[in-house]
Amino acid sequence: MSDSAYRVETTSRLAQWKIENLASCSYRKSDPFKIGNWNWHLSVEKNRTLSIKLYPEISNLTREKPPIASFIIRVLCSVGDRKALVHPGITDKPLKNNDDFVWTIEIPLTGKFIIDLEFLDLKTASPNGGEPCSIWAQGFIQKQSNAGALSSLGRMLSESIHTDVTIYASDGSIGAHRAVLATRSPVFCSMFSHNLKEKELSTINISDMSIEACQAFLNYIYGNIQNDEFLTHRLVLLRAADKYDISDLKEACHESLLEDIDTKNVLERLQNASLYQLPKLKSSCMRYLVKFGMIFDIRDDFNAFLQCADRELIAEIFHEILATWKGF
Image (tube, rainbow, N blue to C red):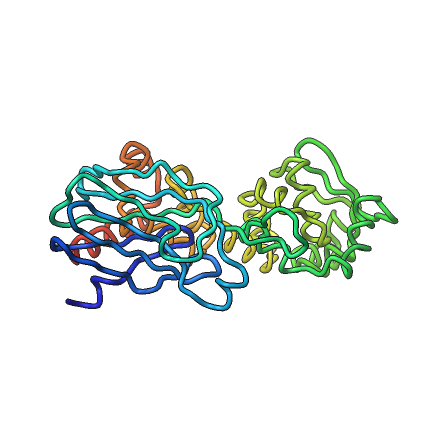
């Protein structure tokens, strides 16, 4: 049997195992696949019923910080029609060994089938004994800054300490500091280094952002942004990062948008990935739509997308479809 029979394809939160010709009275265990901080296994056992198990690979990390998982799992019996058997779902279940999650399916399955596993959240126990913490809610942003070193910058902005420039958003204004802006963005630096109106009037017009989004943008620049605030505005922040050449913010948005691709946002993210040249996001969206077959679940939205999307992007999508279906 080829190695591909045991391989599980993954994206940030989705795993897919394609199984062919599982004989009666047989057992198969997948190769390890990484989701979050852990390596995982799926296994199937076929007798009079079909049993599916999900469990983390035994390691020091699993023993010290076992995953607390929320996920949806389904079995697709027909790729084209997307007919599926769907488990009711698991919420906040600790998984330590191969008996912690077992799904027994009474309906006999023959021929090819696909197991789709989508993690909604993964948590670990809090080190201080409090509520379990989501590994994804910790966020890329919090890893980029040292709260102590940046606390003074945050106060400068929030308390308007010696501000010397005013930023006008579409529905309000905020005071800021040209030195901070100039050090974080070469575009802002250029504004204040040449005899432009921004230097003369000590104002910057950012009319394509709301005051709320502009506040989030400045909070990032000053190292004072909160995770929820970032998640709410990350698409606008991506546009601002590209416009003002703030590479770390652009990368933060890129990494964050990879984490929660789903059928509701995948087309918008694919469009943004193409517009702002985000290769990992484009690749993940393509794989989600084509390799994982989610394109069948959003046919109407996809048809509407084709009417307005860039021709080059449409060509890439169909190239991916042809390449994937040829190999299936």
